[in-house]
Image (cartoon, rainbow, N blue to C red; front, side):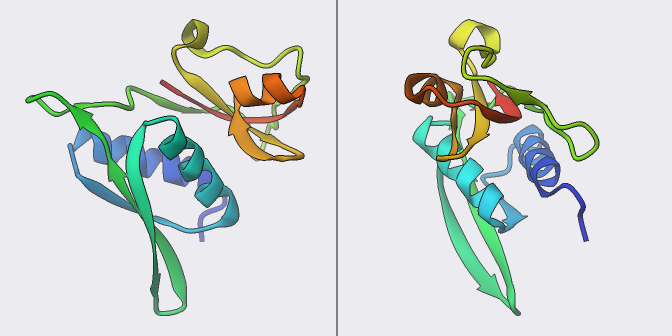
Length: 132
């Protein structure tokens, strides 16, 4: 059993990107499903599919590459708030990743969203990860 499902998911995506895999399988939880939805809306991945197998649910994520050399669209994934040290931000103090090029994924009271959306709604929350 993995203690930090978000870090596990980010590591699996990072490793699949480095190996230039087309799809990657991660265990499905509510929070990982919501993070993947945000990544799809922001154009970092193509799509994802939910698979039920022997009472376990998995997400199959289709990774996105560009060009002939298959350069990954996701350059880096960085976990910010960890189980040992939670990181929270007020709506005024929400981080900007690489001056707005990347996104910060925030868990707010209205659900998981990007830093841009959270700023728009005036919401703060837990800073889960950075993606660029």
